[in-house]
Image (tube, rainbow, N blue to C red; front, side, top):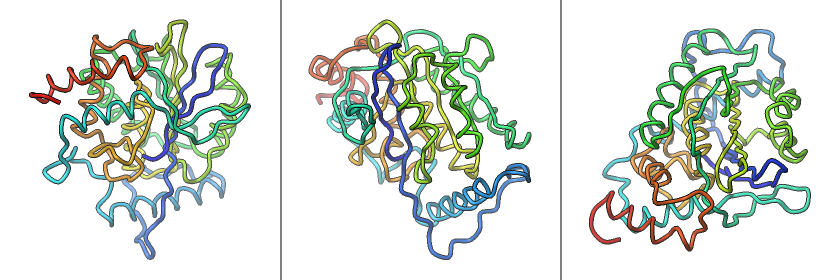
Length: 313
């Protein structure tokens, strides 16, 4: 879902921040989205949050009217070759969309080293007070199912827990997100002001985001935070869960060349595709190592792709 890679350096290590910053354009005259029971936010949310909820409802309706936000994982109309799989992995795993220029984080693709988790992920989902109980229950079930799928693909144990959490998922409305500064600093004591500002100040086109910090070992993630707008209707929200949790595992870039995939800006697919699953399996193949650069990693990636799809690359 659009732009998702940002790389400021912190005292605690490298931070990779990925934004789902689409430029959503609702279809003229789109019908109002019918929300599932209990899907709406509390009645006392601010006018700003209420306006965003209505806006994103129209955005989702516009996407669906154009045949976007597919949940089929790809099909005969969205095939890819071994060569494309290799090239796509190199684009998504070894490059990031954003880089730091002085004290600013700007949209500029830059090569980076390979990132991933090397130990268990202990994930906690935090809901803002604006989120209804029905929506919390539904989303917890969805995220738990997604976590099991990601764990099976990567071999990384992923559990939902409230103890020793190293991957936080926040589902908050506009006002709650703007007040998250102290929470972010409590999670990452060394977080820099530009990253905090980026999270607190995301604009309407940004649907969701994730950032992760390295620990002492180069390329090894130690903590991650994902933020999803509570104003989204269900499918947009679920799409954010798929992309941000997957990108938080170590696939920080987006590219319009990658199809079928959620790692691009076109919103064609809402959920992980067959190719996305292969990208995750490749990322966690033990022949690749955190900290690898693209030149070292490419021959390994080519061998893995040949084994996954058969034949020569």
